[in-house]
Image (tube, rainbow, N blue to C red):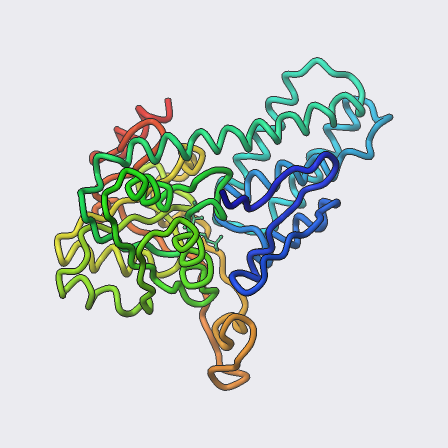
Length: 345
Ligand code: MRU
């Protein structure tokens, strides 16, 4: 199975996703600064993967505090959390994972830096394992939603590269394929960083799942031709009302799906829900540099060198366009506010 990152005794081994699919290049990550850089430039990406990597990053950033007191350790930990929190703003899993390990660490009775940092590493590996299990749960609950011979459209990348396990939306698809359902996948290329073209197509090929790559703008025409049975995407943050932030272009696919009466599902672990945010309008949306739009994957220039660009990395799909949110605890449907509140409790 593909692994986006692996803890290797005293460093984090990271599959550099900016190089895929051309080069399968594994990086040795030994500092919290390298973790920050890897998240910011998308060497590691996808909401759950970012969160788990950050947890390992906190260990890397505090492991030198061997002789620190408990108080000194937690004060430095807070600084490191603030540092990594600035890497990317939208995926709530980044903040959730770091808060989770901090809260659990605060419950441990250790009094010195050496023991606390050792415990922090244990918690990071547990978080990794926890996400692997959540992915399995999502795949399990998604099973009844995928009919035989389903033609499924997906956007961005939500598989093993984006999580600590088999994936969220892509995990549901992989499960259906393993169940022998003869699925066919349409992958949106996912401009501008091409996660669909580079990463999802690579993952689908590694699972031998029949697939076709389409330009983002082709999805509505494909639906009009009656070639899509359902859409499944992931999420970076889901508000309390069920609004789901995901890769830019997701909203467009959701509107087209609604118009053509095609079910549109979001698959995400409960760690992607942010109950402190009431509605989608309040989800912080990352805006990235103009060169990502001006050039094809940081290489060929496709417009004027100084063309003004707007480059939001995510958009928000409102709950009325979502047929269901597939989680590790079941499929949540409307009324979302009430059903999400009950699931998170
Ligand atoms: O900018 P990215 O590549 O980190 O965006 C990733 C996505 O939008 C995914 O769909 C989302 O994080 C869910 S991953 C299981």
